Image (tube, rainbow, N blue to C red; front, side):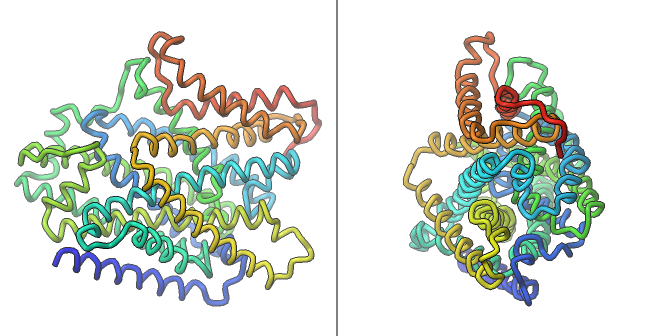
Length: 486
């Protein structure tokens, strides 16, 4: 009965997405798919981007970190505020001034074709690895806790999930996603709030009493003052600022929705509003994590495996049918809202940055739409294959390392954009790929040996800053003085 009800809910949820897709896809063109005809209301974009900024990984993992790390993650989130301010006041004016569809076109204008292609390729690799992993984790949870008992093979679950996303984003792309993200964010937040009040009711304590209890137990501690710790508060804060700049401001997936706003002013309002939304929502995730720990401890529930199993184990095995249903809806919402944007942005970047469908005069509008649809289908296929590849590894440590690799590839993007904006020098365009590879290699080496050469100091999220700085310095070495810059 439980699985049947969850399956029915999933089908109804998908039907709603298809209705939105049909409504937004009428008279859709490539401009509709890529930038939503620049007609998206900024407040809708901002609200919907909450779900896109988070993911199924966030939905599962953040609550699970509270037991070991308290609320230290909030220092990263507070750092986001600085990063989003930079995006709103530095990056967005450039993107709108150049009237960009793909943000990596800036690199072509500023440096040349090789830098442009290098930036786009690093984004494609990063987003493919990251999005596939996020989808894999959600599919894995659904498979383990529900579909295995129904005899549904993992490959069928994977293909079904990817095909559903392909279908409802196939025609209108970003224009559809702006509105489906709104729906998905609503369901995700409703799931969090319902779970908090469910635990409050089960433990017969008010939310305030529960918060006071987790505070007494030290779960709400945010500031780690150990300089050598990977959670040292200053490292977390600075890393959060740069993570926001790179994984939002230099990411086609996130910027594509911003570029669908009517004008620069709307896009800036969207970005600042989003930054404060995220502070509030991430705090709710962490509070939920503390409440989940209290629930498990009160009823003597042992959580096997990693901390990621905390939320799904309690929701699907101990919260009853309604609790399980709400969790599944929230998880699917979080997964959809990050996966649909990822597939759309991959299609956009490959079509524009690699194939140049918007620049080649011999490609008619009708042919450009055909190419975009073929790329979108190919993106879905490759994503499904990567997800299936994760399932064959059967080694969580290796999967985690693969996901970490995606983090390295954002460093060159940070260095390229920073050098282009902050300096007035031109570079030897053909050497950019080599500089990027060297920066990544040195970053990896430094992370491995830092405890030995820095008296136990562990490099954490600040690796992104180091990677970007090395890229910047490398670009300086291959640069010459220039009198103008964008």
